[in-house]
Amino acid sequence: MASTNPTSNAARSPVTPAEFELMKKTALFGDDDVRALRLSHDVLHDQVEAILDVWYGFVGSQPHLLASFSHPVSGQPQGEYLAAVRKRFGQWILDTAQANYDQRWLDYQHQIGLRHHRTAKNRTDGAEASPIVPFRDLFALIFPVTVTLKPFLAKKGHSAEQVEQMHAAWLKSGLLQLTLWSHPYVKDGDF
Ligand code: HEM
Image 1 (cartoon, rainbow, N blue to C red):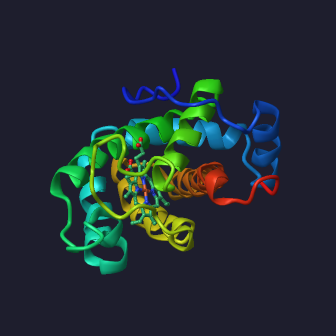
Image 2: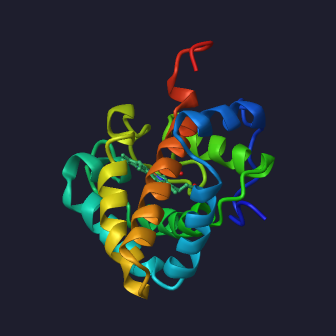
């Protein structure tokens, strides 16, 4: 099963499974990476809350990032929104580590993109935060997300090589997912 996220009543992805296969080749993402991600599931599944503490700590420490979770006029961070998104973020860690790339997963990736974009941001939680996550921050966040994951990947006694493989697989998966999420930000016909 791909996304087990209960909110995944997603629209059809504009990206076909065949196109996603080619995107994987572009990223040098292969069966070894699928195996490394699934190994990371064993390593990470009981560390999800600790990982989220680190990632939320980073976003919360950067006012320009926290702005996406804040009211656009008052600048007040929206606590309930942060908490609701955190639950889906936790599920996303497990989904990413499960690495099951079926149509449902592709459709859910499209949904996540729409939720960062003004098309659907705030809608899932009825939030009153800023209307869009700016595109300029989307890909850059992959670095802090993956570099801070590494100590968690190393916590269960795997070899340095296995940790490297899991880390690289997470980076590639992150790049591929962010690219799928970018669809609503790209001019029609240019994706
Ligand atoms: C590596 C880049 C990123 C990753 C992996 C990531 C991951 C996620 C995930 C997993 C969700 C929940 C998706 C769901 O609904 O199931 C989410 C939602 C969200 N993310 Fe990101 N994100 C990234 C970049 C950013 C950036 C740069 C910001 C700006 C602060 C941001 C702000 C948000 C917001 C505000 C939501 C809630 C959207 C809504 O209203 O539903 N994200 N993100």
